[in-house]
Image (cartoon, rainbow, N blue to C red; front, side):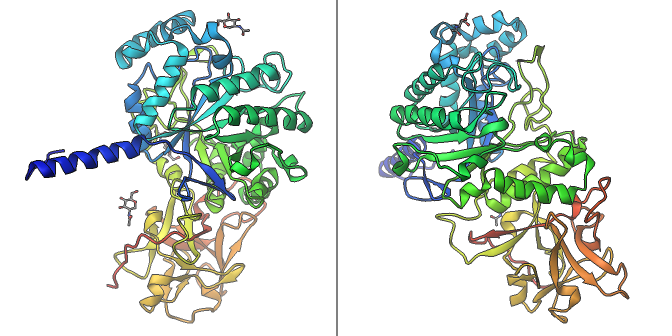
Length: 556
Ligand SMILES: *[C@@H]1O[C@H](CO)[C@@H](O)[C@H](O)[C@H]1NC(C)=O
Ligand SMILES: *[C@@H]1O[C@H](CO)[C@@H](O)[C@H](O)[C@H]1NC(C)=O
Ligand SMILES: *[C@@H]1O[C@H](CO)[C@@H](O)[C@H](O)[C@H]1NC(C)=O
């Protein structure tokens, strides 16, 4: 920054502003809940748009320190639009002083990771002789300097890749999972980080599972863990995950959690969802049917908590970034549509492009990683917008600036239907923050783009197979402009076309061959066919009350 200073007084003023800005950035973020929303002290919604970053594998050294300077990783996280990190750790880091006091160098050496030591020496030389707990703190601080919030996630007890049914870390009472040690560990961790401003929450335990799991012990121990965290750090959100690999919070339907600090509004629940959570359904069955079922199941598994007045944090979801995995390709747009519709807080799995050591393999690649193997750049620029589309809040306290309106979200690309600047009567995929407000009344109605309606083009109309869907004033409300949400996924936006019209039968919104324009085509595999991919035709109608960032298209 270059400043031309007019006077010493101006210089003083600028210095003061800089100090204030700096102070504001370093200020503690204290979050709490307001019904289903996470809010700041002013009551304004803070949407968690996090990425997972592990420190729980055998060396207990935060991944990536051998690949890039920690400050660069932190700035990359913010540059990609994430505002928070779910940072994992093993409970022994907080309970076993002989482990937490060895140095990064010693731990890497003990795991035969000389190459990683060399990498840390180059990228983060100051870390090599820090103890494991100091190194972990330094990562949290670096994130804080970059204004990134942190949720500390107890991922395992004994450091290792997670998770297996029989790995001794699955449930209270398992070989390496002594509940008393765990409660102590949570309390210690909460104490250590109580004064660290950017630590906003603590996830009590990742993916409870295995033959011992039962909801009775879940209440007993999760409530104890929650009390320990809250007693040590009353500022922090206390985040509870479910059973069956954090796939199931349905038991809360019958009985609520009981904690002494309920009135402080700190309780949040977390849930995970991957393609493999739904067994092989995504590969074998019709994607619309699986998506419809999975969305209902999500509500049953934990989505219902939103209407009970608790935030639900989708703290792990993700997909193979190479694009070659059939089940991930079908699952991801479905999951993104659910996350967008419910405007969930979330944490993407994962940041890391590679691991120092995972499951015995040094330098293992992470195909779910936002970053590439070297941690130097995004793994796949094409798919980044699919995640970034979920970062903006759409509703909630502080975002109730407009009457509810509908957004046409295309989860496969992370883009939204916007008015084409060149024609003003057709649509294309564009940034979701530049979409104007649509009006739609399910189960079947006109689709009205407010801005276009004002310009005399009241409704969206199908004009035939492969033809652009067009904003028009013609016969609004007839068959060709009455849209309904077809298929179990409710993401096929369809009209019943007259038999005489080219491509008659049902026509669905689709993306044209140019990959950008919005056209109509015969609806793809509405049901039955498991060998067909409908995702290109998926448009999710979601509700927003956020003021439209207006970029009006002008009539040609
Ligand atoms: C504590 O950590 C040390 C060093 O890693 C290890 O040898 C020891 O077994 C651990 N103790 C417990 C109780 O886990
Ligand atoms: C990026 O993702 C797209 C879409 O899934 C895929 O077609 C492409 O091959 C991927 N590129 C790389 C480098 O993985
Ligand atoms: C929408 O977002 C894009 C990139 O995220 C940004 O460049 C653009 O200025 C935004 N538009 C508006 C109207 O805010």
